[in-house]
Length: 354
Image (cartoon, rainbow, N blue to C red; front, side, top):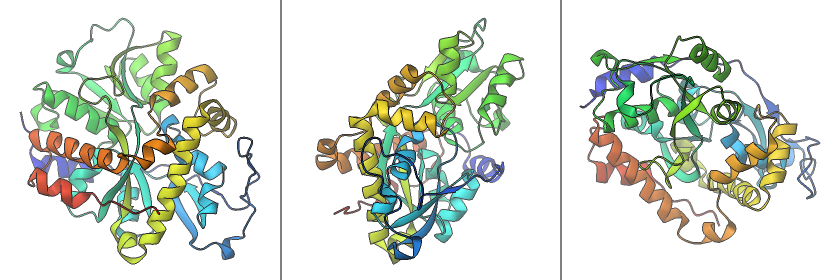
């Protein structure tokens, strides 16, 4: 059952759920570097090659680890940036990418329909796997995707990654995610804790949650998990999140994008080598609300952050293949109208990080 493209456009246009701005600047930070020398004070903003930039990185998701580590370990500074981490919803990210005020963001295939509709960005790298779970109350009789027909599903925002993942899961099972069809209802909650409360009191039947909330409540026995992005057969071993770069920045200053990717890749590789230390930083700096270090380490390890060897191997080919994989999936259910082969080629750009 296909969702009409104009319905998707309307959904995405209605996704302006403004979040309170929360930001912090990297240059001049006194953060520890996990045992390595902190170079955040190595240069003043005026001496940095690319100066001050905004990067969305305050959403509380555990899987944002590469952003947090690149910031705290000074990798952004090493590459010439004074990074200001901000809160930004889907619409704010799209606008910032389009006009170049935000050079790079992380996001899933949620951006693909927006790219088809004219947002000027390209996929430039892969970030991680997994990190989204769908939870129901412990006494719920919902256990499979087929049980979701007629149910209310909580998400962080319409058009965001959990919403897009749920839509693909539903549509692949023959259940329409189009609100006009009436098969399911999506309700947005700007805060994951509010979404969990809505699940607990019966306002919604299913909560699509970013890690670590779903895993925390599962371990506490408050919910049962019916979907795990990291293990579901359709999504497993594919990127949950890509990195998207502004076309404006790619065209006017491709070296800036290459420098950003180097910072992200340093962070990914450091997390691969030091997952426990990465979790310490994330918890101590309050990037994600989780006190269970053992659980957090297990989750971080499950996201498939690459080693240096993986980055030097067939990494770019993996990214390109996963772009095509999800383009095909979205085209199949009617989210995209473009020719899948050409569209996949058009939206991915390999960046020479060296």
